[in-house]
Length: 154
Image (cartoon, rainbow, N blue to C red; front, side, top):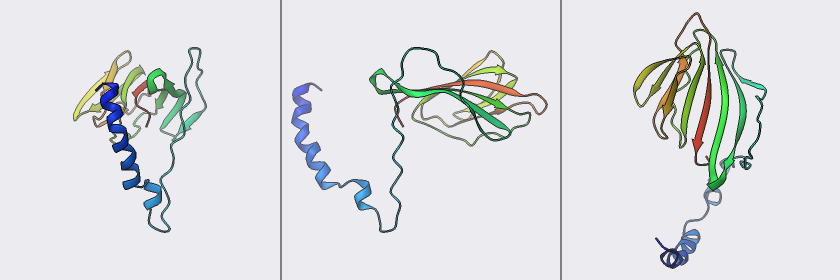
């Protein structure tokens, strides 16, 4: 689509906003409007340090960064520590792609219905939209992994 074709669509797009009012304006009385996502800040080249702990007693995470790369691409990086026998996280799927780099121990990673065992030094990948979960494969040893997620702002 070139600029001329796009500009011919603008009147229709503007008219559509009048025909389809904003979601917050059509809420039922007493209903809470959806939360507005926290705006992501642009990331800059440089050093990022591990942030404070968050999570549960069996799954502790530390964030490094969450923000926007050029071209409106969301980047997030964190590390997660799992206790022996930690329960699996819920099955999820996202608009972003996730990569897990196993730091220590052994993890069970399910992506798109296929379960794999990853050991220290291995990397797992889940393409945007695929169902997935990760958990500690051991009931006696801890596991930890770095996560990088890349995709559209969510």
